[in-house]
Image (cartoon, rainbow, N blue to C red; front, side, top):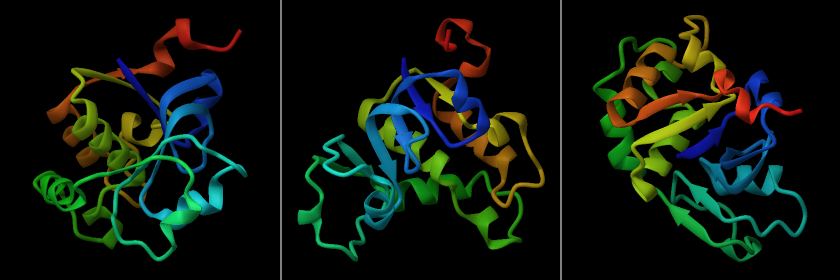
Length: 159
């Protein structure tokens, strides 16, 4: 099982995951960002943790990245997500959140049957007040893989 950490409050429950999103709320084997500038903003100095990027658009020189980079097929995944979109306002509801993009990257790269999610509180709980569409995002993830909610897995909690 591959584990992914978003930036929600439940990340306090784990110490390490396979993939963490840009803010690196948890130690991880890979860092997932939508854009290179997010990596440059949030990375620790001399970080060589492998990077996964959603968009290939580069506004920064790639030579500043000392880590290997995996580029996702963002056009494919954004198009795939549109079949789940329920509302068009605000505009954020039309595009996938960074957490969903991280799931796309993991599915594309490793094609797991199950993924463990932590820090995905608003998606897992279906928060209707979030700018992104939590219900559409959860349905999209469930169409790809089985979700293991790591908030419920006491074996992963800090001691």
